[in-house]
Structures are given as structure tokens and as C-alpha cells.
Image 1 (cartoon, helix red, strand yellow):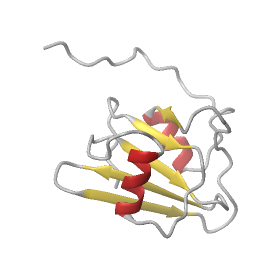
Image 2: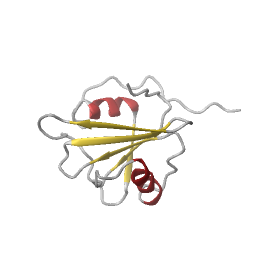
Image 3: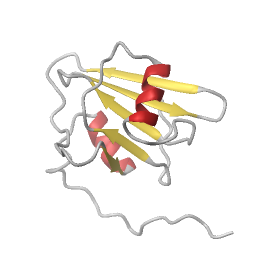
Image 4: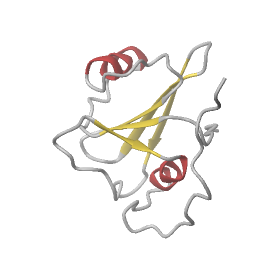
Length: 121
């Protein structure tokens, strides 16, 4: 089961990725395309060209997790289309909707009570 916390950074790669890539190949995409550190503890989400499969890459401090979800029928309904940036940030609630093949633009969810900010040390 994926552990998603409210303060987790979630990056969704907009461009489709060659799904022959494993952990090392997706880590390279994080560095070169998304310009993010794959060791940061952030969650990175990728999709294939046919919009039937998602891969999620996550580093937990000891090693990488690679989650895969392939739909048995149909395609993922929602994916951002933005030519100016390589990724978009998602909230944990949006990630849950995406995993369950919801449409993030038409979903009716409760607003966040308040945004969570990092603690000041």
C-alpha cells in the first residue's frame, strides 16, 4: 500500500515515458527532465503513451519503491496538457483521484481545511 502523507511533494510528469525504463531510468528522468532529486523523498508519477499504465517512483531513505498500476480496461481519464512545463504538482487528494481513474477537473471534493506549511525550527 502506498503511504501518502499531507506534506508529501508529488510531481506528475506530463510527457509520456518509455515504460521499459526501470528505477534507474526513471531516476534519470527525474533529474534530467523534471529537474528534481529522486532521493528527495518526493513521489514521481509517470504514464505510458497509451494512458493505460502509471508508474510511481518513491525513495524512502533506504531504497526505491516502484509502484505500477495498469488498468484492465480503458484509459486514464485525466492528464494535464501543458507545453510550458515538464511537471505539475499534485495534492494527496488529487493523487488518490488519479489512481482511481477519476477526472481531477470535474471532481467535487471538500476543500482543504487549511494548507500545511513546514514547521519553523
